[in-house]
Image 1 (cartoon, rainbow, N blue to C red):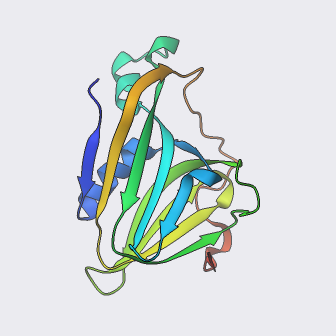
Image 2 (cartoon, rainbow, N blue to C red):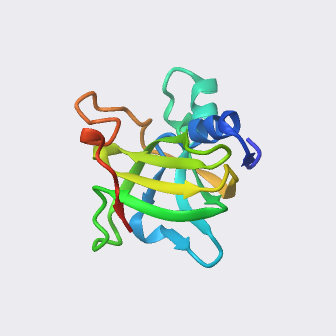
Length: 162
């Protein structure tokens, strides 16, 4: 499969990016916010769902991960919920990326992680780019979602300021 390069400028685009990022894993240390440039970025290992689903069956060779980067532009503020900042090697598993408009085109982009963690980006508009950084490697197994893990942050409380 060729390397992925996607740009998101609206909610439909962001839904496609979110689908490609489902089950991506990253270290906390690989997440960064550059407030003066108003840019938020993550380097991550995304699970290649299109390749896995096209192969069907569950053959191990069809389970691949790819090193990728996602960046969001025009970010005013970043906040977090249930993410310990003092553990840079902690691994987070991304479930979804959501957008909630406030005063369109502005809104909140929320990255929802397994275990109830979330990062919320206050943005002027949706402007994101997802790009693969290299080739694929074989993953030991296909991600499987534990039905007991919360898919959204519990209680709907506001994330804490990062």
